[in-house]
Amino acid sequence: MAAVLIGRLRSAMMPSTIAARSLSSSPSRQRDIKKIKVIKKSEDNATSGLCLTFTDDTQGFLSAELLRVLANDFFPTSSASKRVVWGKENVHIVGAEQCGSYALRLSFSDGYDSTMFPFTMMEEAERSKRKLMRQYMVSLSEKGLSRRPKLKRTPNQK
Image (cartoon, rainbow, N blue to C red; front, top):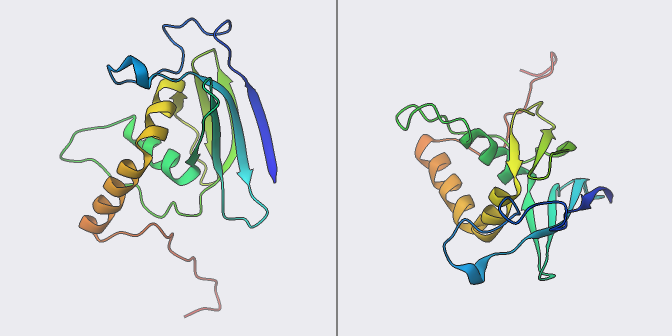
């Protein structure tokens, strides 16, 4: 498995005000991210994403597909014209760069690399990833779109 260790993110490196903490108001749900491991591609070529280890030693995983879809939500234009990102089922992470002590900038196989992912957002997304994926699937269904990318035709195909 090709993986890159981004680093141990200790409280000493990050002041507690910008530590990866929950966005909810419940202090019992707060978890700081201790370590992030980027899975660029697995041996079976199916899994790519971020493995998160929290300070309470629990672990979580965010798929590259979900991160790529969430990346588009960081730049909303208006609720009426919100574009649904589709065809990202096979997208994978090709690079990661730590941005200060609060975020990662990820590069995806579809060429997208314009969003920083704050650690707080990653913790919140990991906690609610099932709900986020359900919302994504519903929005795709409503627009008649698919998670699968369209196949490109070669010149010999009809």
